[in-house]
Image (cartoon, rainbow, N blue to C red; front, side, top):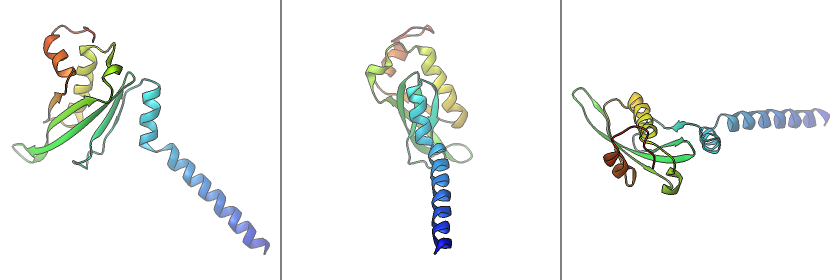
Length: 134
């Protein structure tokens, strides 16, 4: 009977360690932590075209939608639409911030055309000088 209790205790300890590691390595948790700390983080499943990606930058959460199309050599992501989850959080962001996000996305999807949804789209059209804030 004592060996059964030891076995159950050992299994419980292994399970707790496994769940702790799984929790610490969870990308959603990393996104939420970066959002709270106002750091940059990109959560994307590059192998899944249908799944949208999430970006947090300076405390603003953005969502991006990927569209598959053809290039000269293969089927790749050719169009991306990005919008903020909350437009009120955009206060203080500059043109350079949006260009930084675009550059990072182009590293992952080099053949993509990035389109911002309103109000960022209008802001980028009217502000041609870097450093202008919303």
